[in-house]
Amino acid sequence: MELQMPDEKYKPIGHHYIVEASGCDPKIISKVEKVQQILVKAAEIAGAQVWSVSFSKFPPMGVSGVIVISESHISAHTWPEFGYGAMDFYSCGDNVDPEKGLNYAVEAFGASTFHITEITRGLDDGDKAYFHSFVTWEEDIGGEEKE
Amino acid sequence: MELQMPDEKYKPIGHHYIVEASGCDPKIISKVEKVQQILVKAAEIAGAQVWSVSFSKFPPMGVSGVIVISESHISAHTWPEFGYGAMDFYSCGDNVDPEKGLNYAVEAFGASTFHITEITRGLDDGDKAYFHSFVTWEEDIGGEEKE
Image 1 (tube, rainbow over the protein chains, first blue to last red):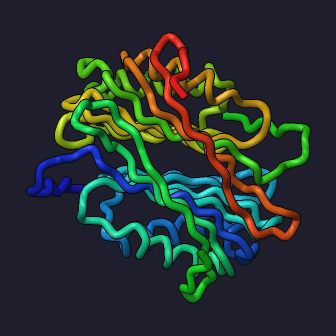
Image 2 (cartoon, chains in turn purple, brown):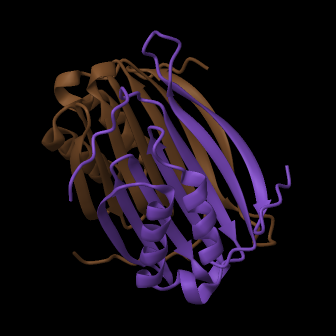
């Protein structure tokens, strides 16, 4: 797979989305192939370049997997017995739209709501002492924000 | 690799540590093999069981990689030109001590300070509407907490 080098200057700033998806369809989130397909498609929809894919069964009934993208990583860990899926989408640079990918993934999981925190990583005040900041909200599938 | 099934009941609660490590040694965090070794050892020190390992160069000078552990995942993305490493350690269950692994990793990176948020994931109020909570602090290497 060819590595596309973006033209812009590389910056350490990244956007890391932490998602708790509820009311997911156990028939979907219990299948390794299905969860992997959804996450790979989410990466594509977000405009991320996939480097490596690793998914497997997650006891007792779930799926666990990570995709390394050129812009950082995406992960999912599922608990079908609770209708719950934990997802991450961490990306750097301006070429990727993680929210677009995540919106696809939570819908494909059959989720009814999700709780999400966006963490902006790699911030500094010019002193190379890096920190992150965050903002949290909730959404019903369909897109209405609760808070 | 054999999968050890813990005896306890599986719960969706997990602890996800988000770390920004500053003042890291560029000679260390620019080498794929070195970063991979450190993260695999961090997984072992934490008591996590490694399922898959995927590390590669991260343009322009850094390293990007993820370890899928039976308890969730660990990742590192580095920017040697800024002495900066972004690390994650997400684990479920009570058999793993992520902080022990992370303390080893930030020291091995040669970091001087780190900014860290611990996110408790998969919380619910009995209604299966999952959310997370978090707490943030900073540490100098040597262990003194700043706030």
